[in-house]
Length: 307
Image (spheres, rainbow, N blue to C red):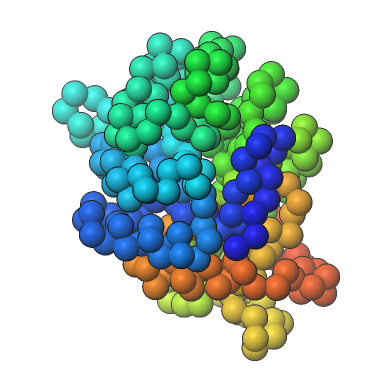
C-alpha cells in the first residue's frame, strides 16, 4: 500500500485508512478486521471518543497494541457524553479537550496520539482557545500533530489561517464534490492535507451501487441529487468505465487523484470488505480520460450552508 505525507508533518499515511466506527463491539470481529487491514498494508486507523461511548477506542487500542509504533493512530474530541450516556453536547473548550485526551490515551492504551482531531467545529466556537489546547498538548508530548474533522468552509478557513493543523477530514466523493469549490484549493495553498471520508457515498459508489440506496435516498435523493439523477449519474459513469475498472476503484482513485488528498478513509464490518477496499486503493490511478469523464458526468456541487 502506497503512503503519502500528511500535510507538512512527519506522518506518512496509507492511501487507504480504516474508519473504525464500523468495526462493531465484538472484540474478536474487531481484531479480525484490523488484522486484515494490517495485512493489506493499511497503517492509518481513525477512531473517536464518541464512538460506542469510548468502547471503540478500547477495541482499536487493544487490537493495535503489538504494532503501536508502526501505525498512525488518530482519534477525535469535542463531543461530550451526558451522565446518562443517551446524548452528547458540543464542547470545544480548552478544559474539555485537555481532559478528553487523558480518557482517549487510557482507552487506547498508549502514551501518545499521532493525530488528534477536533470532531466538528462552528464559527461561534472559542477558536483561539481550542487551538491553544491542541498546541499545549503537542508541547506536552501527548499528541504528535492535530487536525480538524469538518465540512464547514468557514471553520476550515479559520483553522487553516490561524493554527498549525496538518489535516482536515472531510466528506469528499464523486457524488460530493463540494470541497473542490474552495476548501481543497485553500488547503493546498496552506500545505494542509485532506483525509477524505465517505468516498463510497453510503455505498452508492460501491459495486452494489443503487442496490445500496436506502429508502430515504430513494425518496429524498442524496445531497443535491434526486434519485433519478443518481440513477443517471451512477449508471452513466459505470457505462463509461472499462470492464476492468470497478466502481469502488473509480471512487477511491477519484479522491486520490487530487494531490491535496493524503488518504481515503472507509469503514468495514468484515475482513472481506477490507480486502475489497484495499484492492481498489492499490489499483492503477485514473487515466486523464477516466478522470475527465467522471468530472463531466458528476455534478460540481456547492455548499448551500455553513459558508
